[in-house]
Image 1: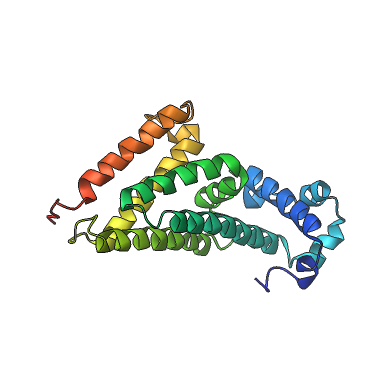
Image 2 (image 1 turned 60 degrees about the vertical axis):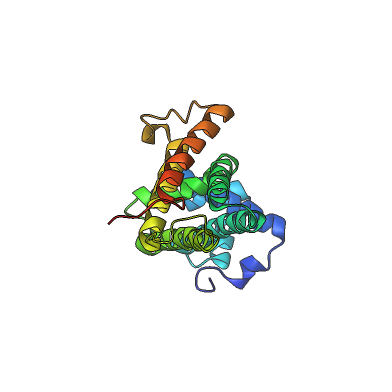
Length: 221
């Protein structure tokens, strides 16, 4: 972090930091890294352009700082979900994690927009490292839920945890994409779904997962 953001930014009043972060989030989420304009960021945040270089190394530095900020917001959410569902079974925890993801996208569309831009923009700086960071964090989260669920006897003891972690990450990530971008959803109609319909789709997905993972089933490679 010290290589991309300067102490002068971290020493700013919180409201000024928030204005700059919000302006950068909006610009990168709307336009992606290559087309994002520093002039627009400084205009929206109400600072001089020269000041921006007192706060960050360069455009890449601003982008990477915004990514770190976005990841920290997501991490706090998932830690909260994980801790608040400790006493619930694996499938309930997974369902609540997915619903929290859907709610997060609605509440923080710009943060999710940054992720989508990195996912599909080959010119995003350090793209491979950033995507690996996202997937690694998601994998750690799901792997932890799986380990605890298996230890409690809620899941098959013969589950291949690494492969199951990959499947859960892929399924939930794809569902969130469909819920966020109409073009990614050609069958579920999530962009038009009301709260009741969305919950039904989530429960259908959980039923499919439960059928394959619940204790009492046998894994046959």
